[in-house]
Image (cartoon, rainbow, N blue to C red; front, top):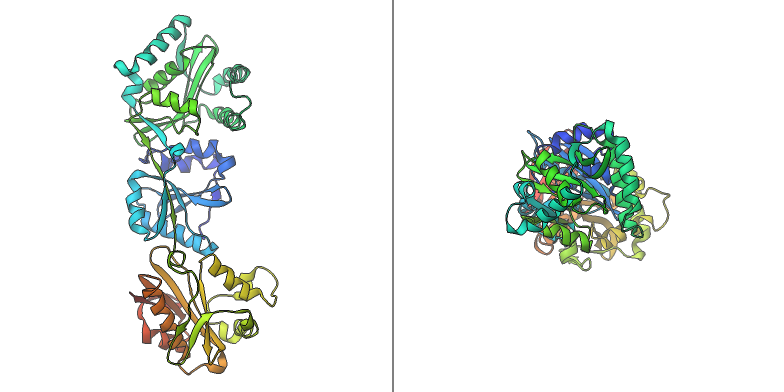
Length: 467
């Protein structure tokens, strides 16, 4: 499993090494977003194959950002690690806030996938020059508001905000909250609290922070960070009693800190009608689409029920409650199952009860994580074949075990071949994988008879069968 650890301020320098050169242009690919929203999103991070991999909590599930490669980073290896991590936990991988530039890569990667692009997630991306100059007819409204602000506050000036200005920042928040127009909006109040906590980091080297000062009084302020060629604005606040302060601080901040940037990202509108109207009035170059990829496996797409498969001597079909005694005996045979490669008892994470193993197999199929076939001879359960570990990229693993009383008669080979054929030609897999312990000569012979050996390590021989 990937050794994730929660995002904290102590990690800021390591995360910025990836974010500072990231060209995804979206606000989620920034240190400020991870720190500001860490309470609801619960982000955790790890370095995998030279890439930054971030996992976030959304609703009751974990979702992943698209990996950010470093100089020697391998995106495919990082994606494989995410998929393995999800397989180990028995959950499908979900990759969200995927930038448009990476969407084709994931569409090619996953044969079956649900893709969405929610409107309210989209970031507002502006050309830096547009916000710096407000040139042309379309920005006449912003220029008029700025002139009114300058007339009302002729001595106002834009200055960077550092630690020395934090007392003035606190006074600003007191004024701002007193006239805050959304005091009954719980979501807006939560964002305000996060912004207030975030501004305490003013002066840190990762962020640009500045404000409009009238003497020692702050009338408006903003905080952002540069990621690649994009200046991402995390916070923009102005006193409502100071007309024109918003467009003025937008222009001043863009001029002060956006000189090396091509784009300025003012983040999404959080489904707020007023924010949407305002951000559209500033003439975005485009909206930054964030795709959500939810891969699906072949069982989910093609299999409604475990079928009955016939071979010359055997029938393979779904486990039934009548199979529970024979199935328990098969699973609890320690001498045989030392070659199985999986501890069924430890996998329960609880006490062994009569229905325990049957219920696991039933739930795995209900969740389309595996298909467990009872191997039957004259109607009696003599073994099990399991198609599992679907990798969402066209592959699954197959395992087979036969009761010791029926070993040595070729039943395992017969059952294994039948399920492999079903997986390739009815479930529409690209390939079926298998492995066996190096000491298990019988399994090696069985797999060699119907599959192609593709490798080995210190523990296993590996095999595949292609469609």
